Length: 124
Image (cartoon, rainbow, N blue to C red; front, side):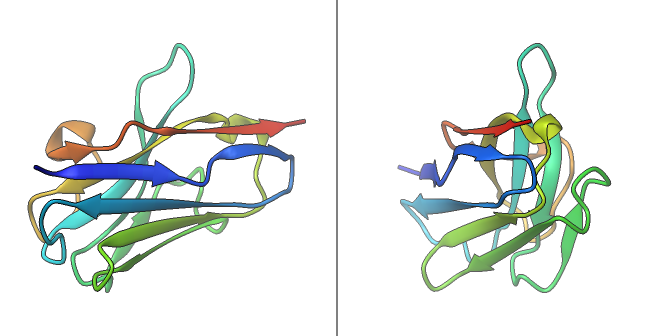
């Protein structure tokens, strides 16, 4: 059974940093693309960042480009999201997603496995 778990969320002030981690278990995800999405209250789930199966290709939403960095460790079945220069508008529940393909996509329905989410709150 596939299991995806996020960690690392919390409360931070504007301009601060957080590092989210995603751990996948139940099978090897080394051939699968992975991504981060977020959902703020009253809003739809939106794409944040994605990474190809090898880690050689990454893609970011314009709103986080230059501030967030996605990475993965296939030996450990983990993926991280380093978030710097955080803004209040980054406040949301952040979700880790796994796509059973080597290439990433930016729409939620293209992903097959999801974590429960971790709350990130940025105070002004």
